[in-house]
Length: 209
Image (cartoon, rainbow, N blue to C red; front, side, top):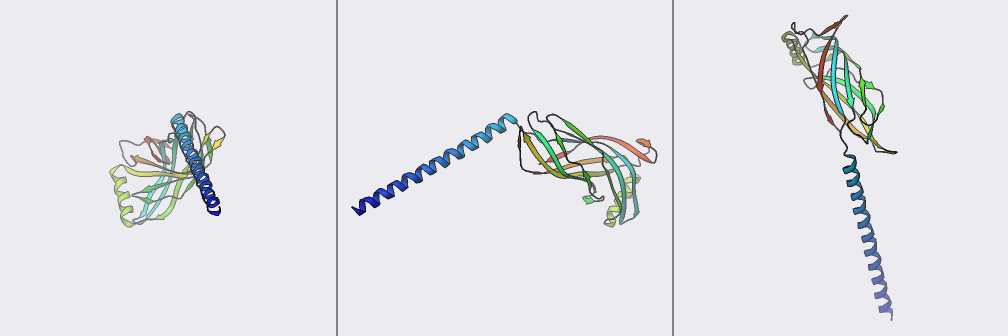
């Protein structure tokens, strides 16, 4: 009699475990299906960034191992999504030359970007007497004498996606904008603005989220 009760008890346990497993499997499949349908309907796209122009106030090599930089850049950001809004947070912009950071970080204010909306930022980025490897100072002087320098303008920050009232977790944002500037080129002087020179660039940036 006791053996029969034990057998019945084990059978009940197996039934409960099977039901729990089936319920978990159904829940997982349903959740994955919902996520796939949301993705298929919304078709999320990364924001688009463009480096519109750069105003050079100063770009000097005081010695082979010291560079001073003062630039204002204009950056356009566009949200290509028709159903998803984007929160930009903790964003900082800076410049690099030959993979070496030559300016300090400049903060960009947090902002919400609606569907198909765009924003324009014009931050100042600068670095006073920044130490660099001697060959970088020599290379920058040579580029200036040749009439063109190539900087990389970078933006690091966080983004959140908004769909209706739902707001996602934060994701890292990395934006890289090549800035090919004909600085020092006598045939392309740009637009003189007092003691600065403005160069129209309109160069697309790569975006990783």
